[in-house]
Image (cartoon, rainbow, N blue to C red; front, side, top):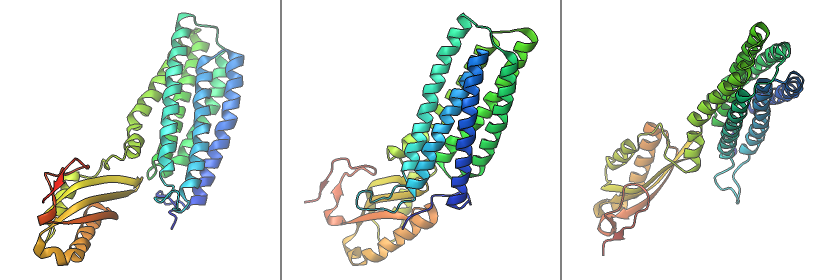
Length: 310
């Protein structure tokens, strides 16, 4: 059965509409800022336009990912397509990092040789950008709480709104004091903030794609909870990962004493119930081993080499 993958309280169609509006708003804004930046000679305005263009591209990627993620599992993707949203988030954060590094380089070059800049064009287009960026951030705010994919978009748009404030302030300083250095300095400031947000957030999708254990789950507590179930002698070869952003999965080997071997179905049900109630782990695969034929010196996590009793 397909999952909607909308954990924000909105139905999928409403969420898609919001993302569509944000795409068109950012597309129009990007065109206007590029034209204005070329006419005024403002690198800060072009920097903001590039950031908005990356937002538009990110929104398109996220929109497509939302659609694909709703497909049901099939013979090619037996876990379903939900992880495509994690891939989209990683692409979006990576694009932000590339853009941020490029803007730092361009800003430094402009500090060395600051050109003339048209202040009024910067202030007017920066103000328009602030309105559009704020609108886009509001559209994605409620959606980002339950989706790493949409959170990447929200941070894109939030940083855009703050960058637009900086651009307007920079244009005002140019008008008042003809301070040309403010343009590249604002550019570097925008880039620094972009890089800060990106490096802070990119670890989440990387961790999921590397099949890392969920950061909000205490693995040791999970292991002890399984070991404390009546009839369980030990557990090993434990794997915890996120099948999708909101679906934690577990597989492990469960060692059962010989006298409890006939009760493994009861033990299995008890383990699964405990995992679900205490840790919200709804998908678990358990392989049972009889204690007299269990792996020796087996590692708790992973599949480190071990041998069974002879």
